[in-house]
Image 1 (tube, one colour):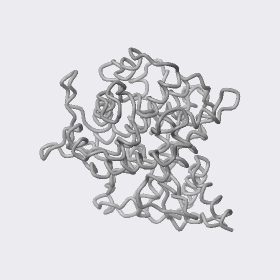
Image 2 (cartoon, helix red, strand yellow):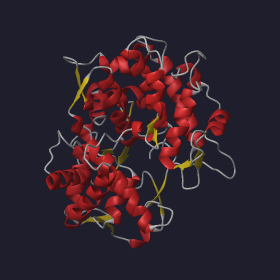
Image 3 (cartoon, one colour):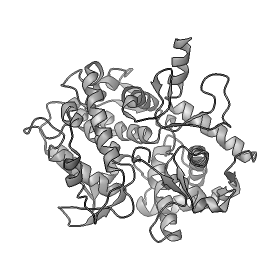
Image 4 (cartoon, helix red, strand yellow):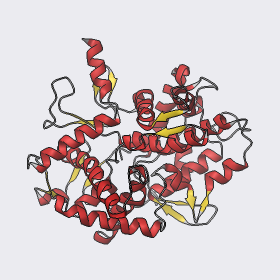
Length: 412
């Protein structure tokens, strides 16, 4: 029985489970069965037009890259990481891939919403950069300076032993945080990196196959699963969820398996122990999207990119609320702050994932593209995330999302 329970738990650690349960939530919503939202699909055409408008503005040829951390390392047309990496002497392609995995994993874990007030002053341009882009450049500067490396001669690495004892003061200083420049959830982020370091150190069989233990060792673990030089994108997510899952604090577990970004909602039915559980895996999926390009640069083909799902976060979710695809049953909920495990937030996030699949079909139909020529990862980038931010700023001066979520810095 224990084995069966563990299998049920691990079935939730997949993109397929996210898509299936989000689709179930949308079906319930369309039937009028949700507590907090009604769904109006007639408004989706307007959302597709808005997404296409921002996509054409950013990418006039509609040659859109993936939604990944790498986009945030480009400032004023200059790709900061590519400049550093191309100038470095790598012994082989795998060495660069490990460094890029280190950077992507640490940078994504350090990103989970900055709050509206925080800014990072970029030493190169003198610009003050906020939100996700500011967090990205700050984390790249930390990585490039060797903050996470145990070898001063080799800065481009994140070593498990360094991460495990990372001082809060180091991140406070590196993020330029002070009373006038507060950053939401800094303690949570620091704790997450320490947990990452401890976990990686304990699993050299996964993270230390060709080097001392480091998050970037996950590259070797994934590359070893390649079949004919190819790896399916959902397998990247499975590796991220199964190998990094234990770092997440105080979340649901089933049969001793940590379920990560997975929440309870009684409307979701199943005939096993996974009943009432809604996996979303937002940060892990964004990280998985961000690991595709390093794998490709290392010579591996990544297939089934649309096997991953859209991201259940506030820009994509806000897009559907601000365009009235999703309407609150109780308008007063717009003024309240909601816990991340509240039924309202779970509904909102799951509906967002399912609606992004619908949106992708509409966008492709309007411009004659296929999932192969315009993957969901590119629609997110073009795309839904930017359109969500644009309408947020048009509706609210500070660009805040239409719903307030109390986050600990490890979900969004």
